[in-house]
Length: 254
Ligand SMILES: NC(=O)NCCC[C@H](N)C(=O)O
Image (cartoon, rainbow, N blue to C red):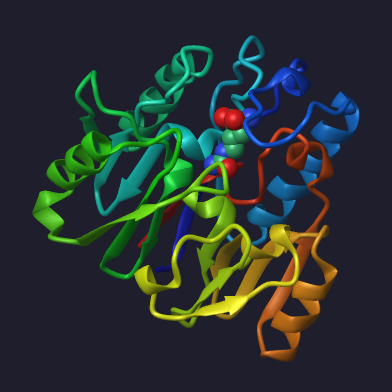
């Protein structure tokens, strides 16, 4: 589970016009978004090698690089983004992953799957059936990863954009979820309930250290009391277009 590399992509100057599913549009500050992205990258750099994929300034949501690909072992699965406005984001990410030596897999044209819907912990992969990902996507992911024989569990997602908007794993194998947004508890081996929605989204940096949004101070206090090392970073400009700490990077783990 050691973090080896993280791929990131600079925000588009047009980031504020990104897709919205659950939120109303709010003005974002492009300079602040860039500063928040740089802070995020700086934190990742303390823990791993950070690789910047060629920017895609014409694509408003391109900073949310997690949605474009999923890496498991030596395989990189290029996902299939639901909306045409996001589909051109794939090309440079695929090129970067191919250049890193990954075996590349692609989904069938008719399948949909976004990286924000894929939650991996040890040998299990939970896949959200949200408005963005479907059962065809789950099946193609299973085919792409067949050599590794992971357990793949499709999970209904009704109240959040992606599975990982509502639930993420902690280093000890428990899960963090906000009760109002999370999928049914029966799909996971137990939840820690977060007081704030943004508190359910963490990135594992190694050991007991997790990175989370500064928008969830009560969850931060809860995790610290539970013995985790918590690093927070401001994410307000990305939260306005339904992004979070997970979607700003593709993590490559051992
Ligand atoms: N993995 C993620 O949580 N991605 C966030 C994507 C937000 C973007 N505005 C979208 O709706 O596609």
